[in-house]
Structure formats: structure tokens, C-alpha cells
Length: 131
Image 1 (cartoon, one colour):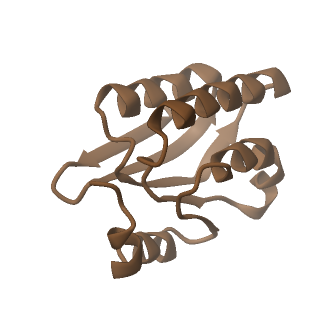
Image 2 (cartoon, one colour):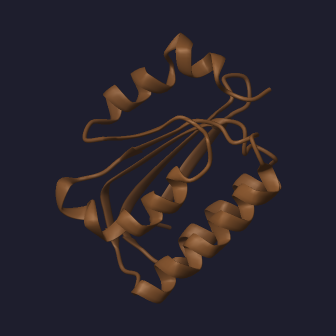
């Protein structure tokens, strides 16, 4: 499976990494886990530097629709999000990034995973994490 994640319930963080070609089913499986585990309020780090998006525009739209639905259901209970991407992949996920930015929650895009984790672990971000 090209998506791997670890959920740390003590630290209230989900760390996910992509490695290889990612398709719609992979994203939906991860979203199922996030919703089913009731961790929408956790801090989330997604490192997609080694991932290759193999999704058509309709697949990205489908993800966007699902994310909006999740956001509406969660309200203000969404945790901070750090995304790590390569420059050349930024435009492939630009639509999804726009949808992710709609809710009022801290979100940043990074080129380096260590900087993303430092930001997520900062006292200011931890203080803005629901629950």
C-alpha cells in the first residue's frame, strides 16, 4: 500500500507518508480511518514527497467533495494540518489544497518534513488543537 500512517493517541497526531503511486482508493481508505477513529481534531502531518499522484481530475474532485462533507460535519473540531510536497507536485494537488484551506484551522505547506513537524509541535499549534 502506498500510504502509511501512524496514529499517536497520546500526542494526538497522525503522521502519514506516501510512497509510490497513490490512487483514489488509497486516499479514501485513509479518510475512512481518520473519520472512523474519531481523530479529526488531531494534528496531521502528510508527507507526500515520495508519492506519485495517479488520479484524474474527477478523482481529485471526488476527494474534494468528501473533504467538504467531513469538514461540514466536524465544524471547528478539525486539527492543524501540515503538508509536505515536492515543488513539481504542488499544482497536482492545488485543488485539494484549496478545499483543505476552507475550514478555519492552522494549515501550512512545507518542502521539508522536519520543518513541518517542528511547526506542528510548536506550543502555538498545540494550543489550537481541539480537545
